[in-house]
Length: 201
Ligand code: 5GP
Image 1 (spheres, rainbow, N blue to C red):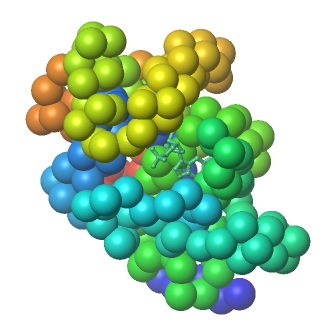
Image 2: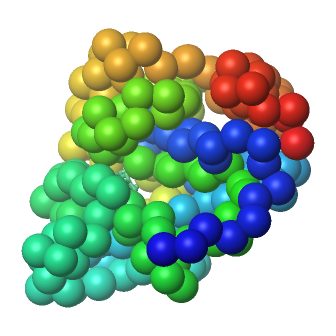
C-alpha cells in the first residue's frame, strides 16, 4: 500500500499505555491527546457491554462473532481476553481505521497486549500508570458503576498487571495529578522520539 506523506522524519512510534482499572487511564490518555494533537489514539474493539454513561466512541463495541471473524482475518495488531471479554487493536494499516499518518500512535491496552506489541515492535514505548493509593483506585472503580464482583476482579488483577508491566520494562508513572502525569508521559515520548532521530515534532 502506498504510504501518505508523513510530517515525521522517522517511523511513527507505538506508545503503549497500560495500567490497572480505576487508575484514570482513559482520562489521562484523553488529556494527553488533547494537549498533544500530533498523537493519534487507536480505538480498540471489544466484546464488553458499554457501561451506563460510557461514550459510544470509547470502543468499537462488537459481538463475539464479529470479533472472532476479525481474528480469523488477521485483523488485529494484538488482542487479549480480559475478564471474559475480548479486547483488540485493529491493524493500523486497514483503510479507514488508521488516523492520518505522520502521528505517533497511542494504544491504551492491557499488559498482555503490551507484550504482543513489544514482540512485534521492540522499539514500542511502554508506559504503566499506577494509582496513587489503592483506596482511591477502588473508589474510582466503584464510581464507574461496575457490578461488585467485577470491581473485585479488577482490583485483584492490579498487582498482577503491575508486575507484568515492570517485567516488560515499562516507565511507571504514578497518577497523582492529571497535568503532571500528562507531562511525565510526554517526557517519555519525547525521549523515545529523540532516540529514533526525530526532531520532536
Ligand atoms: P475496560 O473494560 O476497563 O475498558 O478495559 C479493560 C482492560 O482492557 C484495560 O486494561 C484496558 O486498557 C484494556 N484494553 C482496552 N483496549 C484494549 C485492546 O485493544 N487490547 C488489549 N490487549 N487490551 C485492551
